[in-house]
Length: 187
Image (spheres, rainbow, N blue to C red):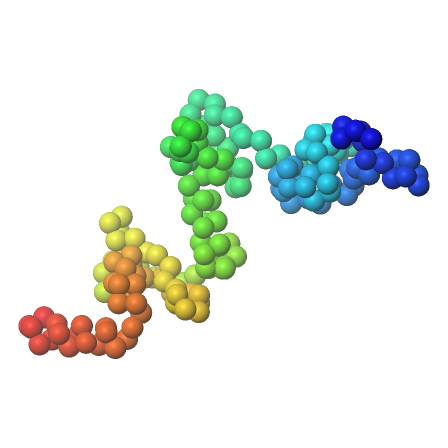
């Protein structure tokens, strides 16, 4: 039997390709066709054909194809909002990414901090940093602070205070010595 021959179930003499209904949950979850094909042990072409059959049956879903840029406007694949091309990161091959900058940042926060989108959006944020008591502005932006050992989110502080905590390795004894040093030297 050649490598190009179709795989068939010997008992029923039918192809082992997945039926469209088996592929539907993966497609609705926006899994890439290559990953679905690997899961079912078939080619991407088979999965594309199953997606086409599902569309013909009336199912509507978002494909992973890149959204075209029209007059400097592009639709984000994740949030489905139309935004100017400037709102997308540029890749090394000069094309813009398929997710807008806001979705890329949100996705990174979800991955790094292990939070859902809803938890990130409901983090309590004040008008000023609780450590340095300066108002947030374009030059002093708020960031999520977390414990590097446990991964637990502690709160939102300015990026300068977050950087300072990182430089002293979140060590309270070092912070106390630094405060003592500043008191001794007139600050």
